[in-house]
Length: 236
Picture 1 (cartoon, rainbow, N blue to C red):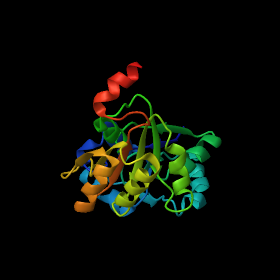
Picture 2 (tube, one colour):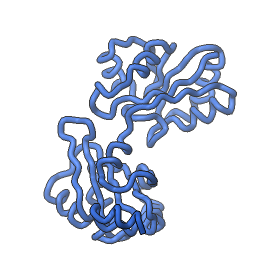
Picture 3 (cartoon, rainbow, N blue to C red):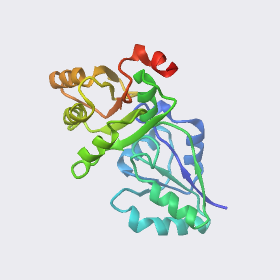
């Protein structure tokens, strides 16, 4: 029986794709891509020639049923996003749900995602964490931050370079400027960087250094004041 494959792709360094992902992309009948131009670069790098079809947030509601029907008719399909794992702050959930409801098998490959490297290298506890992805740009944004202010788990946000400083200012307003944070940018790429400190300190850094690249903001849970205090607080 044909199936839908969810295939993670590199978030920067093209060598981060897995051998299994390469094999799947070579074997499926066609590939659904968030941006066919971006995905063409990766496929060319891997010497893979497969038909590409667009599948993004603007057309997914109109196309998921047809894709499911195509798979049910016997064609294997892979879904990829521009970077990382489809469904994690990228299109994918709707297609997966539609296929499962139609009795179509979905196989998800492990692979690249920005949140886990940022979490691990933050120095904050990562045995339990809260992934928020992109906050609402306007309506409901401050309300959601207020709800998260008392969260004791490590919290992960995605943010664009154009809103990083504003986001940090809002975090300082709701979480307190002394809450600790680790902000990673351009993960796996040449200019990868992680800036650590209090929210207030990191705000000053990015006011002085223009934010560039893709950002992951990792915020310490409530009650974790310093990295050195982690083990002591966990023992209490």
